[in-house]
Length: 152
Ligand code: MN
Image (cartoon, rainbow, N blue to C red; front, side):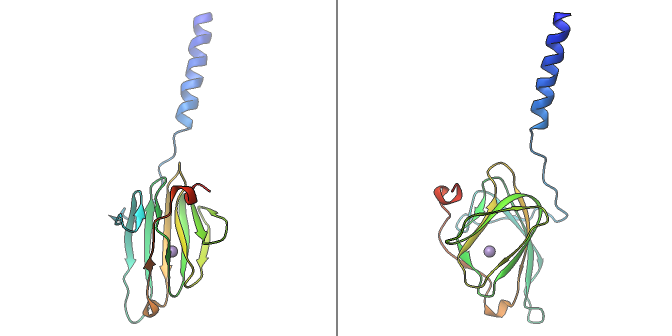
């Protein structure tokens, strides 16, 4: 009886541990290519979905941020729209509190405002981006987001 109880308790503990494993994120897009270390901290993967042209002047793509990965500080001359399709992450406009992002969130980044986006420490982020009016420019990359800023 005692052995049975111990076995049962152990099974519960093991099952409990299994439930805490993070669920892999889903994406309907290919993983894409790893973002350059000069623009990203950690592992971020970009897939271009709509290439820039003179008719639509819009760039669309998907970024998968692994846990802890994030972009450098940057600006978009004509702004940007983010659509979160899975995971948990952050978006921060300089001087404002970090905003937590989750599946289904839509974020408008104003033009020429310093900001960064990325994954949470434990769960990655799947993020669609839309950059309009590319004739004004697409992105201006700046310095890395320090751990101090990321963990604030
Ligand atoms: Mn951005």
